[in-house]
Image 1 (tube, rainbow, N blue to C red):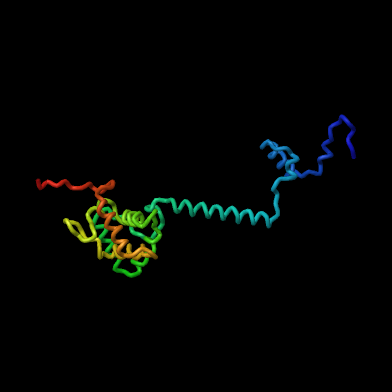
Image 2: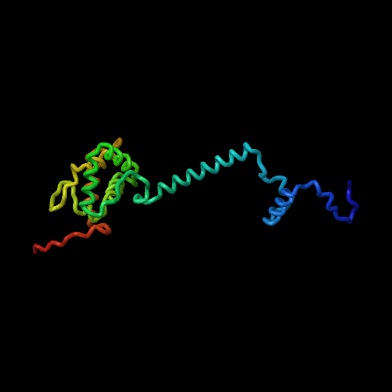
Length: 199
């Protein structure tokens, strides 16, 4: 039935709309949209489309969480590693636990997840995850100049195994570890270098 010109449609002409449709129309108008835009809106959607949308969003969330995890500081990543040693004694406790083959395998697997921009950076990140710079400054590879020998320890062996890959030999790994240990005193918390008082 047509409405005479100049008269507004009666309420009865809209009686076919459900309360849900009217409520949706009000919300759309509140957002600055016109009611007729509802005809092209994406919702409501079929169950199949809804499930597809949910899966898509969950995939996005998963990928974002992966990126957050990669960007986390090494200390906060969930691993099988012990707390970072703040003394030589604490580091030796970790050394003792590696007598267990299972504990060593877990450490190797966890250390292999610690990366870096290059091999030397990876070595530094691993060492800093295992011990504070002050502890690191008390070691060098061969135990010279009054320091403890790092080479040959179970921790050293675990680091080697975690870093071994195509193109990276044990010799290269040891060179990178030696470099990181050498300059540990110069880093924050490393205690600095002792001045020569012999003169």
